[in-house]
Length: 77
Image (cartoon, rainbow, N blue to C red; front, side, top):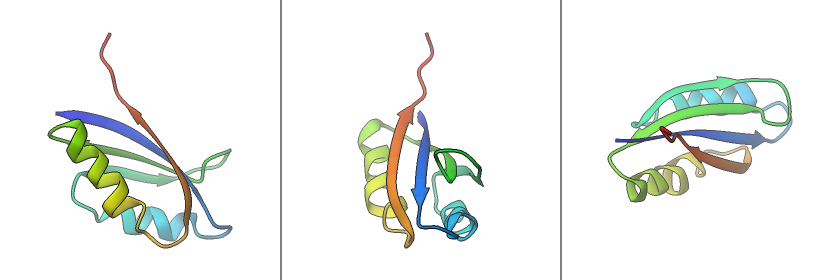
């Protein structure tokens, strides 16, 4: 299982709506609107890196109002 945090920037005033829509996507375990340089932080999981990439590109980035994403896979050192 691969897990990641996805940091998201949105259009002004869209953070809460984007977080709510993303939280309904399969594979997303948490989506919160936050303050700071990013507007939404998502925690997601997938069976492998390829599936994680598909989740981000095909589903999360398709949510209207998102302007940029940064995917940070979780590593266990």
